[in-house]
Image (cartoon, rainbow over all chains, first blue to last red; front, side, top):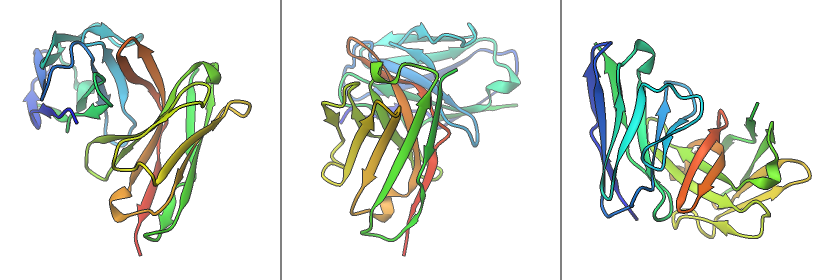
Amino acid sequence: DTVLTQSPALAVSPGERVTISCRASESVSTGMHWYQQKPGQQPKLLIYGASNLESGVPARFSGSGSGTDFTLTIDPVEADDTATYFCQQSWNDPTFGAGTKLELK
Amino acid sequence: EVQLVETGGGLVQPGRSLKLSCVASGFTFNNYWMSWTRQAPGKGLEWVASITNSGGSTYYPDSVKGRFTISRDNAQNTLYLQMNSLRSEDTATYYCTRDGRVGYYWYFDFWGPGTMVTVSS
């Protein structure tokens, strides 16, 4: 299985720029996708294919990367962005990262 | 508006069976692959099963292969997950998802609210 590694938690202030990283154990080309999960809710797709913004998602969210290193950027961060962010690869059978919990100061 | 609504969760003893259902609306169901993904309490996400739009092919990770069966009824816009020989490690919220597929991009673009399955004696 392709293992995805994410940093466990981040804390930022509203208005700042935050980058959330995801590293794959092998190359997944651009087959990386990002989800936002707020407490008590189901996940929501933000980015697919490493950098493609899902319809309806604010342009404050962006994605980049290829191969093994990927980044989700939120700029500027808003209070409503408090959530856990998961990456998922699709080069092989789908696997997810453990998630990065974003807290606002 | 796309809607996915799961039902069928509950408390079940180890070794027993349970069948989940997911009713879809707001899109042409038979045009899309569909999947189940689960999340153990306080944990991350795990892909569980997928089925092609026609129902002709199914896919599973090793953790559930041989125990879980995904199926669909396109006339009823309904997705199913038959879970047999349940184990405590199957305890999770089970989400029904609509799949997005573009080349080797395989992602989950809509998720239901989930149904909780607890495996315990």
